[in-house]
Length: 179
Image (cartoon, rainbow, N blue to C red; front, side):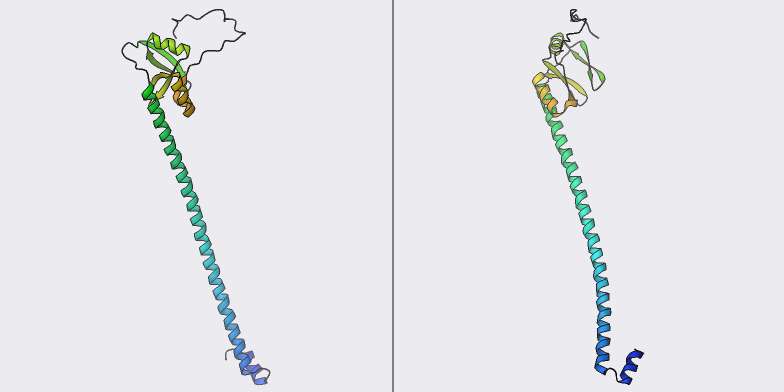
């Protein structure tokens, strides 16, 4: 026996041999159980860590998929706008010799048109839309559809609202005045 107290109790007759063996077995079982508990705890922490990593990966994947869907939606919208512009643009040929300046996104842009197109722009029946860096004339109804989808791609000229307090309201601007 490895326990000196158990030997002394046995010699003194305080305990029997079976009681000493049972105590040793209980002690051994406790040790084994504690060891198993440590192993289970370490397994649980590893399992928790794996679960947490899996949840984080799933969240990243969801975010990535959401971004991809948004990009695809943006590309589809852009393709739809391009198709609207190409299908409804007014043809400008060599007869378009008037340089028409307009502002788009705080920059002055230039487009060549003829006098009829200029009158329609001034009246507000035509709009200007941008497709791949090129500006095209389109009917007002199409320009409004494009503006609903992406306001940065279109310039609509609305009839100017007259100010009642304008001191120059009585003086009309000549049609042939260009800037």
